[in-house]
Length: 387
Ligand SMILES: [Zn+2]
Image (cartoon, rainbow, N blue to C red; front, side, top):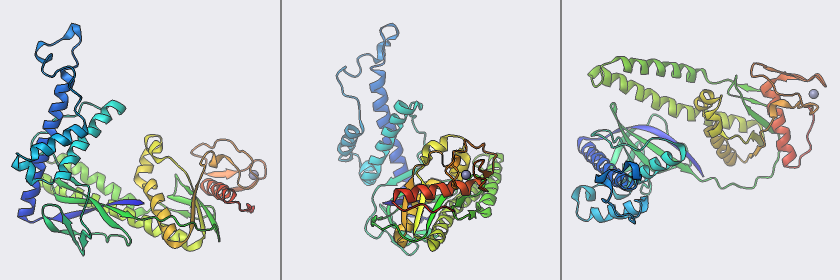
C-alpha cells in the first residue's frame, strides 16, 4: 500500500463554506468539551495531601474511570441524539476530533509535550474525513461529505493508479484547501531478480548517486522555490496581522507551498521512472528517516523528502517489473567497493573515496552506492562482479 498526500485549493461556494464553517465551530466545541472532561478528571486526582484544593476533591468520585477515546466516542453518539448542531455535522469527522485529542494526550505522556489546550473561536481549522465515497474524484471536482461536489484547482493531476481515501479540509487565511490522501495498491509481485543491477546512495551533495557513477543533482527549481518561500514568509511577518495586505501575503505563501509540495512528488515520479528505464534491479539503503530527520541531516532530509521518494520508487519499480530491495545501511561509506577494505569513517567534508589498500578512487557517494549494490546482489544470491 502506498500513500501519498496532495494539496489542492478548493473553490467552495457560499453555502458550502457556511456548512464547513459551522462544522469547524462544532468540532471546536467537541474538542473543548472533551478536553474539559479529561481535565476535570485529572484535577480531581491530582491532589496531594499537602496541596489539596478543597474545590476539586470530590467533584469526580475516586472510582470514576478515566475518559478515553472510546468512552468519549460513546458519549458523543449519545449527545448527537439530542443536540441538533452535533447531528448536522458528519459523525466520523467529529470522532476524528476526539482521536486528535487522544493523540495530543499520548504525545504528552510519551513525548513530554504540554497539556492540550482549549481552542478559542476560529482556532479549529481542519476537518478530517477518514472515508470518502466510491469514485470521489471526477475531473477537477471532489465529492466531500456534507457539501457534495466541490471544484478544485487541480494544479497537478492525480497520478494514475491512485484513489482518494481520506480528505482533510483546511481553512487558511487564503481560503480553503483539501489535503487528499491517495492510496495505490502495491501487490508486491515476486519479481525474479534479473537484468542490470543498480545501487542508490542518497547524497549529501547531490540528490542521489548511483553505482554506475551517475549523480542526480537536487533540482534547482526546488532550491529556488524554497528561497522564495522564505522570502514570502518574511513578508507575512512584516504585515499587520489580519490586514488586507497580510491576507494577500498569506495567500501567496499557501499557493507556493501547495506548488512546492506537489511539484516535489512530480520530480520523484519522473526520477523513479528514469532509474527504472536503465535496470532490472534497484537496491537502496534501509534507512530510518524518522531518526534521521531528528539528527544532523534534518534540514536536508526533510527538504528532499527521501522517505517519500523511496516509497514512490518502490511503487514505480512494482509497476515496471523492476526488482526492488532494501539493504543494511551500516557503514556503506566505510568500505572500499573494489577490495572490501575497511577504510574507516569518512569526514562529511571528504568528497572522494580513495582506498589506501588498492588505490581505487571515485566519488564518495558513488562508492557507497556501489557497496549498496554489492550488498543487494549478495542478498539475492548473485555473484558480485568487481568493477
Ligand atoms: Zn580498495
